[in-house]
Image (cartoon, rainbow, N blue to C red; front, top):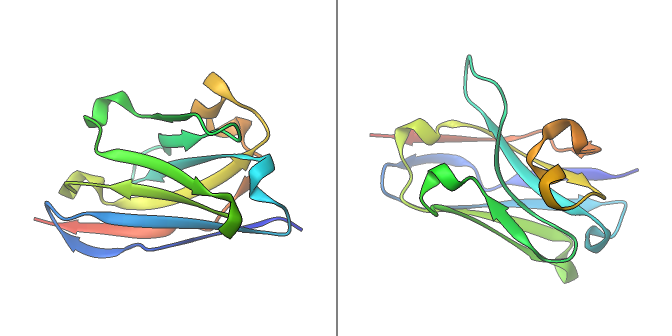
Length: 124
């Protein structure tokens, strides 16, 4: 049974950085593309960044490069680095896994497995 567990969230001040982790169990993460999504209260879940199983990374262009995603297949883990945090980044951050690549990584329905989410709260 595949499980994804996010960690690394918490309460931080605006301008600080944070690294979230997404650990997979039950399968080898090297076979999956992993995406990060976030959902703020009252808003829809939105795409943040993703890294394919080939190693190609994409991120939300509107965030001025503040988000970067990387993977460590030896640790069965994918990371999301968030720099220069803003109060509007406050949300629950989810990771998800799929065997798809490319543009399909932008859309949540294309993902098969989801984590339970980790809360990120940014104070001003």
